[in-house]
Amino acid sequence: MSELNQKPQENRKEQTQKIMGVKDKIDERRYQVYLMDLQCINNNEIADKLGVSLSTIEKDLYHMRYFCVKWYKDVMDSSTKSFLDLYNQIDIVQAELWKMYRKETDVNVKKRILDSIVSNSIKKNKGFKGMSCYSEVWYARQREIIGNPD
Image (cartoon, rainbow, N blue to C red; front, top):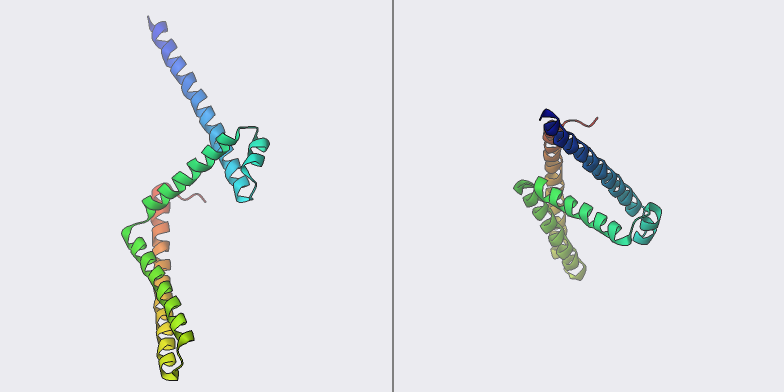
């Protein structure tokens, strides 16, 4: 009776090991696909080099992009999103101010526009320095959570 109980457990272990081996091979292939994609090798060439179908390469790339976007959304908290929104709005305002500056003929108005451009640049720079500090704290917190890879 104990022999019957051992065999299913052994089979389950073997199956688990096989599955893990297949997952490792897939992960390694995806890593190779990623590296080749970064080198601007087209999908057909990647498929030929790795000896897999084009649809496999496309699925691997989709998988990587999907999880990159998912990770990005997961790690971005509301303060980071707010900062990036503000940062982008300053860029939009700056572009409009430069357009106004180029069209303006009155020297005094041009001076006020330039003052606004400089003021916005300083705000943007200060905000970026604050975000840099924030990101260092965030990275330190992530290293604590997942462990330091170094």
